[in-house]
Image (cartoon, rainbow, N blue to C red; front, side):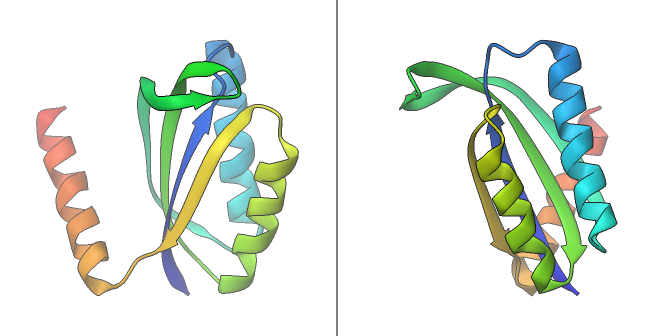
Length: 112
């Protein structure tokens, strides 16, 4: 099982319910493909560095999970098919990135 992080940007015209539904869809998709969710973060509405699809902002979300390598390609195919998705990036984490992500999670828990 490899350790991954996926950041995706959702269309800013979506309602709160549509955003929750979309995030839940991809979380369920990962779990059904053998992934174990470690953390989810909602970064909220953020201004984009450059326009994407004529939009200047988007809703950012981060998933951190462990999954078999063959689960990533189907996830990205689903991202490409979904018109609510503006951008996504999935990266494999090495041991240093895993340690850094854990520190970030702990720091975020302390702030909350």
